[in-house]
Every structure is written in structure tokens, then in C-alpha cells.
Length: 378
Ligand code: TRP
Image (cartoon, rainbow, N blue to C red; front, side, top):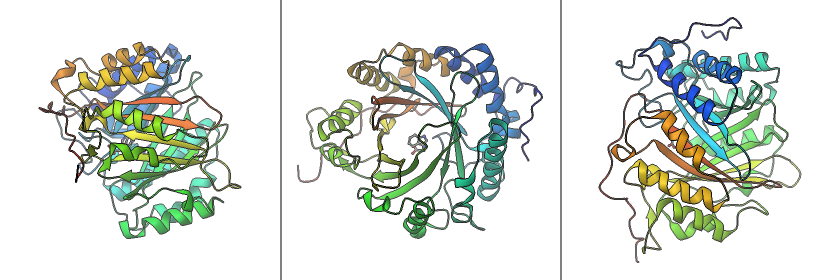
């Protein structure tokens, strides 16, 4: 359905989803210092990966009402990943084909698009191919089939990540599916290394130009007391208990209620495996859905700035990036900054990532108060 062409396609027409997202991406590319040539290449890829949905007028409802890639069903989300002393990396995650045609078609389109990207940039999809029967059953269940993320490096060739749905054959099969996927990729002991959790959310693969490609498993943690963040990571040499708790606390600002529960959208964790010998994860990321714990995006941005500074990172580019995706006053909505994440990988400096919603369809209204509840029995 979607052919990634080598000839230059026409840019999406004004007033379409594609024009909205391409405009945002173009400005974001400039914020992080990518060249004009890279920005041109990456915006073209974005429109190509969205396919015909890019031409959909913004006045029409989202093509995939079931999609949960973003709150308002925009099929793309941006993020900036920061490490001290370097330019941030710009990334985007999208539902290839915009989810049009339903879940099953979305899965087929997703696989086709990833394989076309592989041809375009010269990488192999062997590890994905090995898992196809597990994650793409005949009658897939929701809420996603395949998401594809690109890390938009200078030079026009991105790193590629693919996200799959552990519950594709039903939530009751998620554990078995993830175990089997890990086993096929040689990570026989990895499942046992995961922390207790409420749900397996994504199974992800790095494809393409990675030094150490990861296999990642995402977990959700409902009603987490802030103080329990310390127990989420199973990474040896990873973030210590105090660091995780301090990050979470600064992101949600529970104030005096030090046992406050994150009882809105759950905190997520991601363990990444890069070798099959130890059975242990070599990376860990904590994702905080800050949009459910802040009144509006000004508050969310202020907290992000504090956190970036704490890690020795200049927050200016985040402030510019926010201005690149929206013109609205930040007090007028919440959800533009969807998540703040803290990522640790062995042998590397910690990274702080801010996820930015495209808000093509809707802005969530600000809430009267942040929504932390005291822990039961407190
Ligand atoms: N929108 C979904 C959620 O909020 C999935 C998602 C999109 C997500 N971007 C994310 C999850 C970044 C974690 C981090 O859960």
C-alpha cells in the first residue's frame, strides 16, 4: 500500500495531518541543529510513513479511533533525548499508515513499511521476521499492531525501533508471547529478570545502525506509591533507589504527601537486553506520564527544566522544541508534554527524554489540580 519512493513526493497540502506533522518536524529538526538536507529527508520520510493519511484534512476525525499512540489519536509523537554536554537527539514514533483500515491492516502496513525502510537504509529485519507469527496473528487484538520509531541522527540515516504488542493474541497470552519472543532471540533468562508488574505493554527491537541493539520489554505499574519507584529497576549498575525516587518525585511533585500514589496513568518501566550471557538487563528507563500529574503544560515544562538542570543539561532546546510544536499558551492545555523519562544504559551517561504530543486533533483542557492521592493507610 505504501511505497517509499526514491523520487521526491509532493509535500502534504496545507490543512492536512501531514502538513501539520511535517511542519512540526521541520521546526524540531532546526531546534536540534539538523541540517536542511537532513530535515528535508526526515520530513519526507514522515509523510511517506504516514501514507495516504498524511493527505487527510485535519477537519476529519482521526483515521484510527482505536489508536493509543497519543491521547488525541494523532498517529505520530515526537521526543527529544538529552544527555549532558551534547545536542539532544530528536526522535519520532509513528503508527505506519496512520492505522487506517484497522488493526490487522495496520500490522501488515507496519511490517511492509519497516521492510521498505530496511531496503532503503540497508539493514536486515531478521529478528523481526523471526517473531512475525507471535505478534501478527490472524485475528490480532488491540491496542496496537506495530509502531515504528526513528532516531533522527545527522546524516539522513536514522536508527530504527519497532514496537510490538505482547497482547496481540489476547492479554492472557502476553506473558507466554514475550517469553517465547525472548527465547527465540536467545534471551532465555531475560524474562525472569523483569520486575513484578501489572501489564506487559510493548516488546521492542532495535533495528539498523546500533552499536548494541537492544531487545526491550515495557512494563506498567499501576497505583505506584512514589516511594516504591526505587524498586522498579533490575539493571545491575543502573539507577539507584534514591535517583529513581528523586526523578519521579520531581516529575510529579507530590508535595508533602510523600506516600502519594500515581493512580492516574501508570508509570512504565523498560528493561533492555543487549547480551544473552548474563540474563540481566543492561539498560533501564523509567517513564513518568507527567500529563496526568500536572495542571497544565507550563507546570510540566517547569518540572522538566528542573530535572534537565539536575542532570547538567541546558534546558533551552526543550523550551524551543515546545515552541516548535505548538503556538498555544502552555497554560491552556495539558498533554503536550506526555512523558518524562530517565534512561540508564551501562557505560553511558544518563539520558532525560521529553515526549511531545503533536496535538493535531485535540488539546486536553488543563485540570484544576494535580491528581496525586495519598496512599491508602497513610
Ligand atoms: N500513548 C501511550 C501511553 O501514553 C503510548 C506511548 C506513546 C508511550 N509514547 C509513549 C508510552 C512514550 C511511554 C512512553 O502510554
